[in-house]
Amino acid sequence: MPASTRVHDLTATFRTHMPVWPTSPLPILEPLGVIARDGYSVERLNALTHSGTHLDAPYHFLESGRTVDQIAPGDLTGVGAVLDLRKEITSDVIPQAAIQRHWPTSFQPEIVLLETGWSHIRAPTRKYLYDFPGIAPATAEWLAEKKVKGVGTDTLGIDPFANAKFESHKVLLGHDIWILEALDHLDTLREGTPYTIVAGPLKLEGASGAMSRVFAIET
Image 1: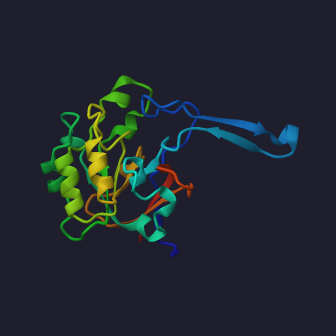
Image 2 (image 1 turned 90 degrees about the vertical axis):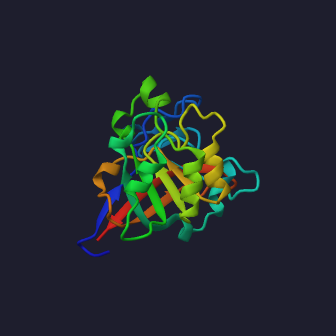
Protein backbone atom coordinates (compact mmCIF):
# COMPACT_ATOMS: atom_id res chain seq x y z
CA MET A 1 0.00 0.00 0.00
CA PRO A 2 1.50 3.40 -0.97
CA ALA A 3 2.85 5.54 1.86
CA SER A 4 0.35 8.28 0.91
CA THR A 5 -2.62 5.99 1.48
CA ARG A 6 -4.83 6.91 4.43
CA VAL A 7 -7.06 4.32 6.05
CA HIS A 8 -10.07 5.46 8.07
CA ASP A 9 -11.42 3.07 10.69
CA LEU A 10 -15.22 3.37 10.73
CA THR A 11 -15.69 0.84 13.52
CA ALA A 12 -17.00 1.59 16.99
CA THR A 13 -14.75 0.19 19.71
CA PHE A 14 -16.39 -2.88 21.21
CA ARG A 15 -16.90 -2.53 24.95
CA THR A 16 -18.67 -4.37 27.74
CA HIS A 17 -22.22 -3.02 28.13
CA MET A 18 -21.92 -0.77 25.08
CA PRO A 19 -25.28 0.51 23.77
CA VAL A 20 -26.99 -1.96 21.44
CA TRP A 21 -30.49 -2.44 20.02
CA PRO A 22 -32.89 -1.81 22.94
CA THR A 23 -34.28 -5.37 23.07
CA SER A 24 -30.86 -7.04 22.76
CA PRO A 25 -28.81 -8.26 25.73
CA LEU A 26 -25.84 -6.13 26.63
CA PRO A 27 -22.54 -7.52 25.33
CA ILE A 28 -19.94 -8.72 27.79
CA LEU A 29 -16.21 -8.88 27.06
CA GLU A 30 -14.38 -10.41 29.99
CA PRO A 31 -10.78 -11.53 30.57
CA LEU A 32 -10.37 -15.22 31.35
CA GLY A 33 -6.60 -15.41 31.13
CA VAL A 34 -4.24 -12.70 32.35
CA ILE A 35 -0.50 -12.72 31.77
CA ALA A 36 0.48 -12.12 35.41
CA ARG A 37 -1.45 -15.19 36.54
CA ASP A 38 -1.64 -17.46 33.52
CA GLY A 39 1.25 -16.42 31.31
CA TYR A 40 -1.13 -15.45 28.48
CA SER A 41 -4.12 -13.22 27.83
CA VAL A 42 -7.44 -14.47 26.49
CA GLU A 43 -10.97 -13.09 26.64
CA ARG A 44 -14.52 -14.45 26.41
CA LEU A 45 -17.13 -12.59 24.35
CA ASN A 46 -20.84 -12.97 25.03
CA ALA A 47 -22.86 -10.93 22.55
CA LEU A 48 -25.37 -11.13 19.74
CA THR A 49 -23.91 -11.14 16.24
CA HIS A 50 -25.66 -7.80 15.63
CA SER A 51 -23.78 -5.96 18.39
CA GLY A 52 -21.58 -2.91 17.87
CA THR A 53 -20.60 -2.10 14.30
CA HIS A 54 -22.06 -4.99 12.34
CA LEU A 55 -23.31 -6.16 8.96
CA ASP A 56 -26.83 -7.38 8.26
CA ALA A 57 -26.88 -10.14 5.64
CA PRO A 58 -30.03 -10.77 3.56
CA TYR A 59 -30.80 -13.83 5.72
CA HIS A 60 -31.48 -11.43 8.62
CA PHE A 61 -35.04 -11.01 7.32
CA LEU A 62 -35.26 -13.35 4.34
CA GLU A 63 -35.29 -17.11 4.81
CA SER A 64 -33.87 -17.58 1.30
CA GLY A 65 -31.35 -14.75 1.59
CA ARG A 66 -27.57 -15.06 1.67
CA THR A 67 -26.01 -15.69 5.06
CA VAL A 68 -23.00 -13.62 6.04
CA ASP A 69 -20.51 -16.35 5.11
CA GLN A 70 -22.05 -16.59 1.63
CA ILE A 71 -21.26 -12.97 0.75
CA ALA A 72 -18.19 -13.02 -1.48
CA PRO A 73 -15.23 -10.76 -0.60
CA GLY A 74 -15.73 -8.81 -3.81
CA ASP A 75 -19.26 -7.96 -2.72
CA LEU A 76 -17.95 -6.57 0.58
CA THR A 77 -15.68 -4.00 -1.06
CA GLY A 78 -16.32 -1.19 -3.50
CA VAL A 79 -16.22 2.50 -4.28
CA GLY A 80 -18.05 4.30 -1.52
CA ALA A 81 -19.29 7.74 -0.57
CA VAL A 82 -20.42 9.39 2.63
CA LEU A 83 -23.53 11.56 2.59
CA ASP A 84 -23.36 14.21 5.32
CA LEU A 85 -26.99 14.48 6.40
CA ARG A 86 -26.40 16.02 9.83
CA LYS A 87 -28.11 19.30 8.94
CA GLU A 88 -31.00 17.48 7.28
CA ILE A 89 -32.22 15.61 10.37
CA THR A 90 -35.50 17.11 11.60
CA SER A 91 -37.37 13.92 12.51
CA ASP A 92 -36.79 10.19 12.76
CA VAL A 93 -37.14 9.81 8.98
CA ILE A 94 -34.35 11.10 6.74
CA PRO A 95 -35.95 12.86 3.75
CA GLN A 96 -35.32 11.09 0.46
CA ALA A 97 -34.79 14.49 -1.14
CA ALA A 98 -31.89 15.10 1.25
CA ILE A 99 -30.19 11.89 0.18
CA GLN A 100 -30.69 12.85 -3.45
CA ARG A 101 -29.23 16.33 -2.85
CA HIS A 102 -26.11 14.86 -1.26
CA TRP A 103 -25.62 12.11 -3.82
CA PRO A 104 -22.22 12.44 -5.56
CA THR A 105 -22.31 13.71 -9.13
CA SER A 106 -18.76 12.87 -10.21
CA PHE A 107 -18.88 9.11 -9.57
CA GLN A 108 -21.36 6.32 -8.90
CA PRO A 109 -20.92 4.82 -5.42
CA GLU A 110 -21.29 1.09 -4.90
CA ILE A 111 -21.50 1.56 -1.14
CA VAL A 112 -23.18 4.56 0.46
CA LEU A 113 -22.72 5.64 4.09
CA LEU A 114 -25.33 7.85 5.77
CA GLU A 115 -23.83 10.26 8.29
CA THR A 116 -26.39 11.49 10.83
CA GLY A 117 -24.05 12.40 13.69
CA TRP A 118 -25.65 9.78 15.94
CA SER A 119 -22.34 8.13 16.79
CA HIS A 120 -21.35 11.27 18.69
CA ILE A 121 -24.11 10.66 21.23
CA ARG A 122 -23.44 6.93 21.64
CA ALA A 123 -24.67 6.25 25.17
CA PRO A 124 -27.44 4.29 26.92
CA THR A 125 -29.88 7.18 26.63
CA ARG A 126 -33.43 7.22 25.31
CA LYS A 127 -32.43 9.56 22.48
CA TYR A 128 -29.62 7.33 21.23
CA LEU A 129 -31.53 4.07 21.63
CA TYR A 130 -35.00 5.06 20.41
CA ASP A 131 -34.99 8.39 18.56
CA PHE A 132 -32.39 7.73 15.86
CA PRO A 133 -33.26 8.59 12.25
CA GLY A 134 -33.69 6.03 9.50
CA ILE A 135 -34.95 5.85 5.96
CA ALA A 136 -38.41 5.18 4.57
CA PRO A 137 -39.12 2.11 2.39
CA ALA A 138 -39.48 4.34 -0.70
CA THR A 139 -35.97 5.68 -0.09
CA ALA A 140 -34.69 2.12 0.26
CA GLU A 141 -36.25 1.35 -3.14
CA TRP A 142 -34.55 4.42 -4.60
CA LEU A 143 -31.19 3.24 -3.27
CA ALA A 144 -31.81 -0.21 -4.73
CA GLU A 145 -32.43 1.40 -8.12
CA LYS A 146 -28.93 2.89 -7.82
CA LYS A 147 -27.56 -0.68 -7.86
CA VAL A 148 -25.53 -0.28 -4.67
CA LYS A 149 -23.91 -3.26 -2.95
CA GLY A 150 -24.36 -1.95 0.55
CA VAL A 151 -25.79 0.85 2.67
CA GLY A 152 -24.34 1.94 6.00
CA THR A 153 -25.47 4.18 8.82
CA ASP A 154 -24.02 5.50 12.07
CA THR A 155 -27.28 4.72 13.91
CA LEU A 156 -28.52 1.48 15.45
CA GLY A 157 -30.75 0.70 12.47
CA ILE A 158 -31.48 1.62 8.87
CA ASP A 159 -35.18 1.84 9.82
CA PRO A 160 -36.27 4.28 12.49
CA PHE A 161 -37.06 2.47 15.74
CA ALA A 162 -40.77 3.28 15.29
CA ASN A 163 -40.91 1.12 12.14
CA ALA A 164 -41.52 -2.16 13.90
CA LYS A 165 -42.05 -3.92 10.56
CA PHE A 166 -38.43 -3.19 9.52
CA GLU A 167 -39.66 -2.29 6.05
CA SER A 168 -36.48 -0.60 4.79
CA HIS A 169 -34.41 -3.54 6.01
CA LYS A 170 -36.64 -5.87 4.00
CA VAL A 171 -36.47 -3.72 0.87
CA LEU A 172 -32.67 -3.51 0.85
CA LEU A 173 -32.05 -7.10 1.90
CA GLY A 174 -34.68 -8.22 -0.58
CA HIS A 175 -32.54 -6.66 -3.30
CA ASP A 176 -29.50 -8.55 -1.89
CA ILE A 177 -28.05 -5.30 -0.52
CA TRP A 178 -26.27 -5.71 2.80
CA ILE A 179 -26.52 -3.15 5.60
CA LEU A 180 -23.89 -1.77 7.97
CA GLU A 181 -25.14 -0.35 11.26
CA ALA A 182 -23.59 1.50 14.23
CA LEU A 183 -20.69 2.87 12.19
CA ASP A 184 -18.35 5.43 13.75
CA HIS A 185 -16.05 8.26 12.65
CA LEU A 186 -17.97 9.07 9.46
CA ASP A 187 -17.06 12.70 10.09
CA THR A 188 -13.46 11.86 9.13
CA LEU A 189 -14.64 11.33 5.54
CA ARG A 190 -15.26 14.07 2.98
CA GLU A 191 -18.51 14.25 1.10
CA GLY A 192 -18.03 14.05 -2.66
CA THR A 193 -14.80 12.05 -2.32
CA PRO A 194 -14.62 8.42 -3.47
CA TYR A 195 -13.23 5.90 -1.00
CA THR A 196 -12.57 2.21 -1.22
CA ILE A 197 -14.84 0.74 1.45
CA VAL A 198 -13.97 -2.59 3.02
CA ALA A 199 -16.67 -4.21 5.15
CA GLY A 200 -15.11 -7.13 7.04
CA PRO A 201 -17.72 -9.16 8.90
CA LEU A 202 -16.75 -12.30 10.77
CA LYS A 203 -17.27 -15.34 8.53
CA LEU A 204 -19.87 -17.10 10.66
CA GLU A 205 -21.48 -20.13 9.06
CA GLY A 206 -25.21 -19.70 8.53
CA ALA A 207 -25.37 -16.39 10.38
CA SER A 208 -27.75 -13.51 9.68
CA GLY A 209 -24.99 -11.00 10.27
CA ALA A 210 -21.76 -10.42 12.12
CA MET A 211 -19.71 -7.85 13.94
CA SER A 212 -17.48 -6.09 11.42
CA ARG A 213 -14.31 -4.07 11.10
CA VAL A 214 -15.01 -1.43 8.45
CA PHE A 215 -12.40 0.69 6.63
CA ALA A 216 -12.51 3.55 4.14
CA ILE A 217 -9.32 3.80 2.11
CA GLU A 218 -8.20 6.93 0.25
CA THR A 219 -5.07 7.73 -1.74
